[in-house]
Image (cartoon, rainbow, N blue to C red):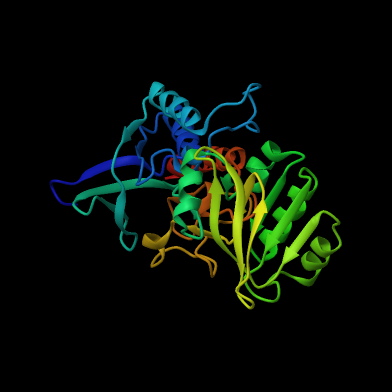
Length: 313
């Protein structure tokens, strides 16, 4: 180890519900955790205006406020919360990481809580209303409740899009699916499910031109048929994007086992990875549930697994 490098017992990479929960448990176990917040302190929830499905908040809470509270709770027990992000790792001989390319840290345990980033279309209007919290979402399960008895649009053609469209159909008056090609990518069973649902309208060969609103909330979506070039305005209050997520795991690829998309593979029933002392929690390993509460649960698991690992040495 270089003389100017640090040595710490437990490093937590990422600051969403998984990272902060891991920090709370690790701190209470006297593991002196150091948590680096990453590029987006607080994770995906900082882009969510209202969180109403996390237990313990009967009146709901905003995503940013929840993250502030989680950070304060982690710090209360002694977590060293730092700004900055991990830019490089080396797990060949011990567990080494570099923060902001220059600060070297040698770790006894690491909890990866780097999450995943939702993919968006990249339209200026889409990003505008996403930031305003006024009608754009990448999580139907998280936000569908706010659009009860309303008309919404969902973009996507895979299993996730079909699943989220079906979920929305139980809450919303009408769900319009926008599929860019002339067929779904989803499995046959998922295709049949949405096709048989009366209040789901499927528009094939259709792309989004613009998300339209009043400057605060969405009120319609302008779409174009890419065969006929005809443009149509669809009155809606919600615009859901279901074109996938990208796990924030690139720096770990040389060392950790991952699936074809980049999600870290953990040992079933635990948070352990294929590298001893390295544990994973939250959306970096979860492409199925992707909820704050499940992320927090796996953060707890990772801290407990790390504690037991240290005790076994």
